Image (cartoon, rainbow, N blue to C red):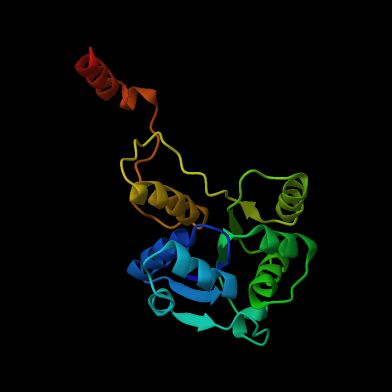
Length: 200
């Protein structure tokens, strides 16, 4: 499998890093584009260096290199994820304003009818954000907010991060064990009763 991974300046750079680590473990070809804002966010939000992040990819491209292979629909890929996806990038995708390689690759992914997953990271949304999500979704994008679930009883930040990354992998049909899947309320009932008794 071959995926494009675009990393933009929205908060949540760790999501991209964990995704790249998992793709590398699974020997999935990752073609990486990191925006200048994302490079700063990686530095501000994590203890990782940009060169480590780039080393996780099979190939990396300059943010402004519109001549890169991934800018063409003739370059075969299985899909693209933008993680995290800033509201600026969402706006560019929604309106077809392809003035950098991430936007161009996303545009190409949509026109070739390939999966495009946008892991948007903003809170709260204004009406412009909502309209842009609507336009992107109408064009074929999958809007996947970085909103971790809690039914799997996460105990660490890593478990919260992995649940979002696992949902991204799900969108491409990639098997993983990053989080416990929901199997109904009865699955949790014995544990809930035990914990409730402990508190009494």
